[in-house]
Length: 75
Image 1 (cartoon, rainbow, N blue to C red):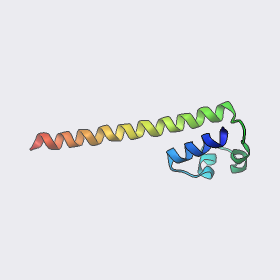
Image 2 (cartoon, rainbow, N blue to C red):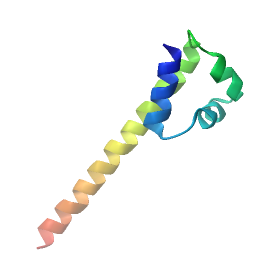
Image 3 (cartoon, rainbow, N blue to C red):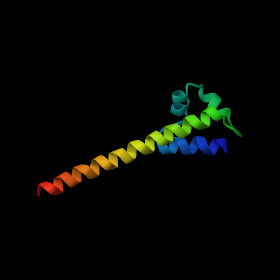
Image 4 (cartoon, one colour):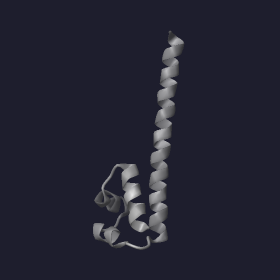
């Protein structure tokens, strides 16, 4: 369970487990040692990082769509 969560978070964010551990303020070995269950704070932290990434991507899509609409309206 925890390995899947860590892997999924890293894939979504496009970072390594080492980079994730740095963001979390923990030693990379600590992250690697969480095999069966993640602490609640770690799960919430990763969920927050993923949500931020998704919101950033959605915001960028809106900005891009707005820019395209402005171009179309100028024609």
